[in-house]
Length: 515
Image 1 (cartoon, helix red, strand yellow):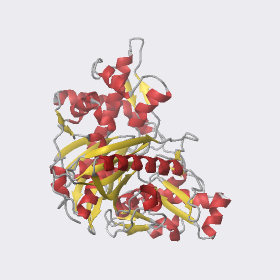
Image 2 (tube, rainbow, N blue to C red; image 1 turned 120 degrees about the vertical axis):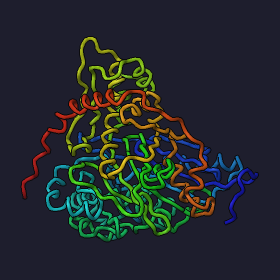
Image 3 (cartoon, rainbow, N blue to C red; image 1 turned 90 degrees about the vertical axis):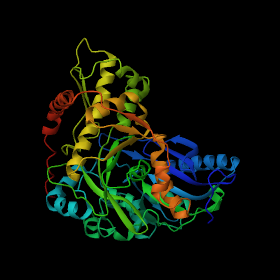
Image 4 (cartoon, helix red, strand yellow; image 1 turned 90 degrees about the horizontal axis):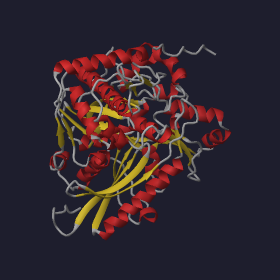
């Protein structure tokens, strides 16, 4: 392919899809590295019970198809030639569908789902140490393979499809690739496979022993490829173009690229549905350390057959906590109002918010921990509560940063932030104050995941010579400098740790008795 000349009349671009937990966006990343023609559609998330989180696979696909068609139509009007498709997707959300009809056979089980947390505890003693060394993560509460095995065992329609060779399993990237290529490709990438808990870090292979132990039929595993190795083209009948699906990545891995985490010690935090802290560690994995909960080793990305590794820690409820407070409870009109009110309240007031709406991972693993709003009195105002919400999110992110730093055994050399929730100036200033580091909110931070996968695809397609070229060409963002003293920071963090302590002392659920 002929490389474009920046500024020429003929523009080249990559159609990039960012399929998140609560919505899907698509846009065209131009040869300058900027994104244009972005379209968005929300996606429903259902909670059948306190531990279950589900989505409709068909809604995920139709929403993706809709925003892709809209973005492509705008690109055509602007005389932009789309040469490839790139995907970034929510990770570890799994689904089952019928190979012949393409129809989903069950609701997708979302990465936040904890319905099997109790059963998985029974595996921890035997498997945690083994899996941490092999896959970079313990058993945990994510259970895509266990969930699929249970679906086969408990639902006759799913069992029949498995017996007849019609059953297809995959994560969101697998589902979208299968649909985009008209069923020609059944595959997943390294950065998506790792989040299932069944990926051998240093061998780039499935951990078949662990996956089979969960009762999952190994013949259902998708092909395992690098993030830039998908060998498939889009079905022209769907999008009006037949182009390579040139890259597919987990969303946080894509964001790590876009936010400049290309060398060891360079890190990022993306504030979306949850908050994710990632840092690059180079060509050798930095494995989790005993006593540091919730920090996972994984491929940062796999390009050209070579893996660049990273560390990650996350909390499940950031943007989802704001949405819960606004949409479900009606406490505030919008997340923007929370930020505006927070600036009117004093720091470190008596009110505290612990955003553990889906458990706690770091600093201690407590999957059944619950959220709390405490320290209220008749003097507490809505502004005080808004400030407590923002501080609770920021403290939770500080816990992640501390865990990743201690696992890496080195300070962060750089910390850039992105994601939709990072658009709150109030939250970013509170975050800089509490973490004690300058934070750079990258320009166009809300599209970091979308741009990162497109950069990887563009390098494969010859738009850029390497990731450094396109990432470093992007405009710099706003810097938030810490504005409190080290002593104040220590006091604030100590107050948070005292509030969090009862949640961390909460006993883990009892292990189930052997049947």
